[in-house]
Structures are given as structure tokens and as C-alpha cells.
Length: 423
Image 1: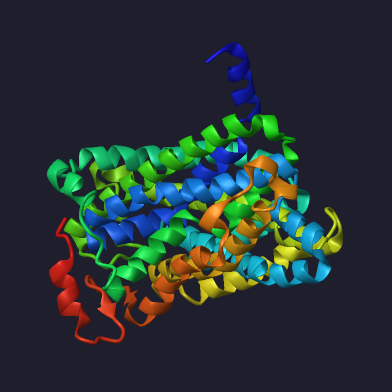
Image 2: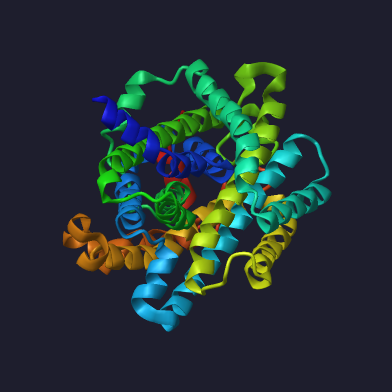
């Protein structure tokens, strides 16, 4: 690599890496814990396998922003007109609210871990979030919260190393077949997919590349950054699954907020505080990134101008229902997060279809346009079948139980327990 290539890589570096690292947020970490506690080493292989679709989808989003100079929301409005943009804004706004719910739920878990009053804490976080979004000072918040989030990630990696996972079972998990005929597994698989590929990522990546002024000549280093981010992101998610396996050994496979204090138990008495502060910082950082993604998705699609009252009030309108839902779900925060992660695969289907349709146009992406079956709507809808088919068998994690209660129970619990990889 010569000096010119290094300069190009440094100049383009940022958006793809940030979107991948921000993807390892509190909701994703909680999901990794739960799927690890429930299905054991098998889910390590699942997380590593998700590196491929994560890279492919984010690469398409990066190509759109780099080659066309448009974010996804702008592209829909400019290419297909106002009516199509308004129609597309429905899943965009729905995704925004769902994502806010997931992050506020994770922050509520962090508040519980620290022994702080949850409702006043949520209200405080909501007011700070709205103040940041209203002022547009995202970068200052990112600079303050990223180091704290990295402390949590480092603690998870250290714990994953200290618990000494079984290398034989770890290797076997990479070759084990997935029991996709089991609805209870499909639900956890859907939650894993939703925790890795979130709707906001499509808007953030394409919009950030466009605003950074990247051009087609920057495509190679941008793609390399996307690939590196996907690999690191999924290695981190695999580490959360390993910690989840350790949790399953100690507290059973139905997690709640209190049980999560065991996640960093090898770190001693500070584990509760590292986890609690890390969850709050990671969740708030994700709120900020999602707000930026909303600005480059929904708000661009409906053509609300930056700085106007309507533009700013959108953040309030989207965030208020999220806080209310979390406040009403304090006894089942883990279940709420998992349900949202699984439901993301449904919301993703129309958004992936729109992204594929736009990125396959030669007048938009030129020689880098999407070709072949990846641009067809069937591929984008396949992940959505997982939560739809498995929803009646989704596990409910209650406050005072150590095992999941399946609803409804169609004789599935016994078979499921027999199949779970004992950590």
C-alpha cells in the first residue's frame, strides 16, 4: 500500500466504521446474551455467519451514498416523486420509533443495574436526547460517549476470554446445522438478524457517505472499511454470545435485568457499575446515531428542511411513544428488546427492497450498480418470514423465572430444552 492509498483510506474513513461499531449497542448486546444463554454455542456460528449479509447490505448502502451523492431518503424522493416518498416514510417512521423503544429499554436496564429510579431516569435521558437532537450537536455527544461505550465492549471481550469457552464446542458450532424447522429457534434467529442489521443503518451509512462528499474514486477504501467494520462488529457480537453462554450456566436461560449483573462477574464488584454505565452510554449513543439516521431517512423523504420547527418536532413525536412503551414494560424489558429485534426483520423487507431497486439503477450507481438476484424483492422478504412464522412460540422472560415460558405451549418446551446446547 503506497502513501496515496493510505491518504485515501484516512480521508474516507468514518461513516462505515461508525455505523458498524454503533450497531453493537445495548439492544444488540442484550440479544447476544439471551441467544447465547438459550441456544449455547450454536449461536456463535450464527453471529459469525451474519458477517456476510451485514457486509453486503451495508456495502450497497455505501455505494449509494458514495456514487450517487444521495442518502436513501433523498434518493426515493428524487427518483420516484413525492407520493412514493410519503409512502416509503411509513416504514421509516415506524422503524425510528421501534429503534428508540429498543434503546430506551436498554437504558432502563442500565438504570436498574445501578439501582437508580427508572422513570425519572428515563425522563432525564429523554430530555437530554431531545436537547441534543434539537440543537444538532451530535458530534460533541459522540465524542463524550464513545470512550465509555468502548469500556463496556472491552469488558465484554475480557469476560469472553476469562470464562474460557470450550474450543472444541466452539469449533463444532461453526459446522453444526441450524434447526430452522423449530419455530423457537427461528424466533431467536430472527432476533439475531434484527440485532445485527437494523433499519437505521441503511439511512445512516448512505447519508453519511453522501455528506462527507465521497465520490466513485473513493469506493475501494470505503468498501474495505465496510468489510473491516462488519468483521469486527460480528466478532464483538460473537463475544456477547459467549458471555451469554456463561450467564446461562449461572442463572439459567431466561434472563432479566438483575441476572445481567452476572455477565461481567469475572471482573468482580465493579461488574454491575461497568454494565450499568455502559448500557446507558451505549444506549444514548445509539439514540444520537438513530436521530442522525432519521434526519437522513424519514425527514429527507418527506422533505422537512433542517432547522425548521417540523423538522425538530419530529424527534419529539417519535420519541414520546418510545418512552411511554418502555415505562409500561418495566417488568419485561428483555422480552421487549427481543420482540423488537425480531420485528426489525419485518420492517427491513420494504426498506431493503427500496435500497436494492435504487442501487440496481445504472443512472444512480453506474458500474457499481447492484446486479443479479440481490435486487429482487424475494430476497429482501425472506428474513421477514422468520418472526412471522415463529411468533406464537416466542419465549417470554418474566421477572422471577429462571426458565423461559413458551406461549402457547404446544409440547414445544420439552423438545426445545432437549435441543439446547448446554453451555
